[in-house]
Length: 358
Image (tube, rainbow, N blue to C red; front, side):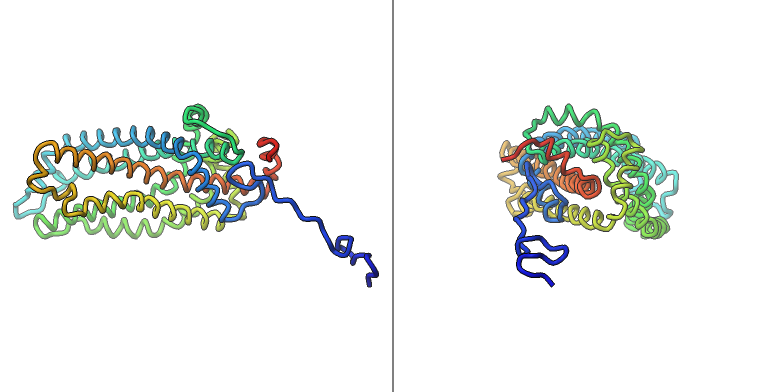
């Protein structure tokens, strides 16, 4: 039994009183301590708020080039199979069009589909390489510029692209199966419209069931390697080393990383939809660009309205796409930092790099 001010074993002196513990330093968007979900999401939002110009500038360059390349591929594919496409759409014979007609169409647009996926992966890799660069300055409370982001991110884009490609190969099977189901549905609808028969129903069934079976394994592996882009940029790791590093950091926290990253993707999807919603409302108005009156549809008024709508739509789509990609990636980068703070005491190194804070 304790007497006077003598504490019980394991309790502090002076009657149990302890001096208040100072809060962890916060030179930038997050405190330099183990992070909760609110601090991770809040840190991602704060980073976007502070450095939206840099994020949007990188996204404009990456997705602008990607859009031009995909449009060119679509144009080439259309020119190469336009005769067959018109014959299929205008088919009036008693027999369904055979593989000689549908085969080139399926192969051509399938190639465009794969090229579009690859182009999008490259554009996303540029964003993935830029987000850690921007976040590093945001965490340390340092200013940054678009030029600085480009100089530091571009040398790591190849490695990030390699890790993204290898990670994407994990999801390639369910994606291809889902694409098979989509194209099967598309051509089945064409066949039903042309002559009332369905010749591609097996594609829908095989594709849907295959994607359903292989999807869970792809999700598990994707989460396991989801921190690879951050490791590639923050630590200068190579492709295989960054994926191994990601697997090491995710171990023991798979469900936490899965849940927080899934929430981040949902938030980004909703935000992207809200950003593009004004354009949808504009097109739905009776006097909107889709339903111009006869008076407005003549002369420069129609051209001005349509041009304004296209520009507004392009800008809103770009912002929505940039946010949809950048916000979840910032969250994953913060999860990477959190895992290193929890397992490797990274907070001390970050505090030293940030310098004295007021």
